Amino acid sequence: MKNLSILFSTLAFVGVLALFGLRMSEHKSGATQGAADKEQSTNTDTRGRIAYVNIDSLEARYEYLKNKKADFEERKKGMSNELERSQRQFQQDYQSAERKAQAGTLTEAEYQSTAKRLQQMKQSLEAREAALTEKLLAEQDEFNKDLQQRLDNFLADYNKDKHYDYILSYSKSVGLIMLVNEELDITDEVVAGMNELYAKEATKENKDTKKKNK
Image (tube, rainbow, N blue to C red; front, side):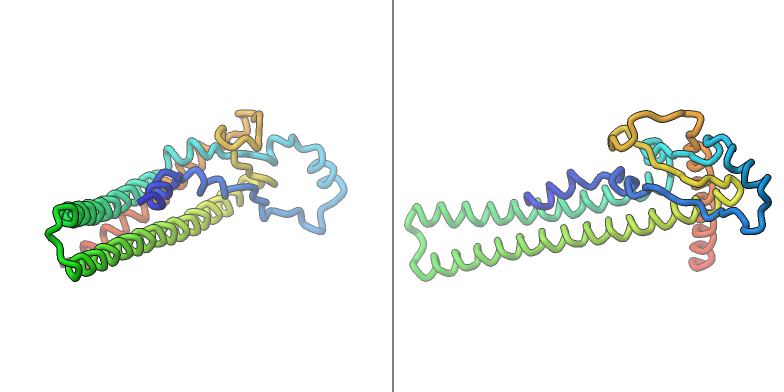
């Protein structure tokens, strides 16, 4: 189960959020602006045009992400338990066959049949491990896309009023930005806004579920 163990140890959601990257605002100056407006825009404090989101904080506080991560961990645990049970059964059968072979209680035909069966068990276990690993990777990829879309959609709507030219992501674990001005931090607003949207989604989903169950 080496491959699955490695996969489990590397499924960190910070990597997902690192895709946050750099987002250009859709806000653009109109072509008919006068020279005075252009000059005023040029002299605008850059702190009003650049902001950043602390993705470490977002990961820890975004309820949708926390719930998805918990669900993912639960599925991962179930898959791991399944493989461990199969592995134990294989080990028991192998050790039993080994004892019989050492005691000389197996005929040549029985030995060949047992060896073939154990080889098939081993191949089946390896195939199942590969299938579960592939399934987890597919789920992670799908979640990555969903999370990225949520971030993009929220920032696009959020920036309609803010008019930032750039919204950067910042993380202490990813050393792309060494120093930040905390006055440019919009993490609290982003987390609050995204959690509010998620709460509305969850409420609607619960209502729809209750209607279906009636």
